[in-house]
Image 1 (tube, rainbow, N blue to C red):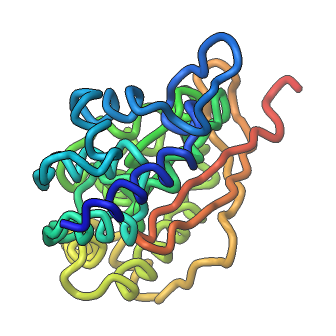
Image 2 (cartoon, rainbow, N blue to C red):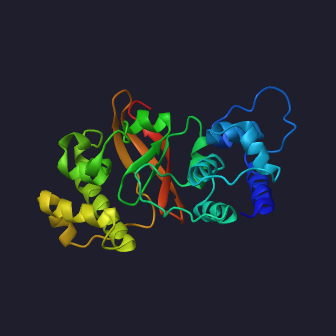
Length: 263
């Protein structure tokens, strides 16, 4: 364990965060501490303030892998920073996983600051990992599904209810866009990826998917505009702007409502 370097690294990453970055209120008055306070990091890491303080003062015990992982999440560390944290503690970092709820720290920091803006984080297989409340209102709760249905592509081709928020006139174009995106994700992620498994399943289950797949569609360079049938606003024209995390290839999409029926 490299005690001094570990302490310095924790202090530097704590100082780089603001309360709003992790969903905390800044509190009244001027903060004397740059970045987060030690007690805030301890709270977010589910450890005692005394324990965390001793780590930063170069006198703490060797933290377990579980504690390191909790601190990495609390400090919104990137994958590279997380591995470095484990290295400083003399432990091997657990392998990166493709778990459906693992949101890239950088994208989570951005999402935490968006407030009432409709935005979401998804992965290349079309699984929505996290949504702002405004995005849930606009699109519905896309994080409540399990299994293959976590993917909006899978739901589109297997569940008629998934098409209710898209005008019927747009279904054909939207189908092609989804197939093209999943095809690109499958090529990028490889034969053992979730995206490739979804391709195989959908080619078996959906004749429509298989027919479009055979045309080998290619995705566009930008997120195409779309229309959404909103239960209160009617048909809404929406533009999506994407920010991609290079470590995990996750996508943060920020939606702008450009017009609605009755405007």
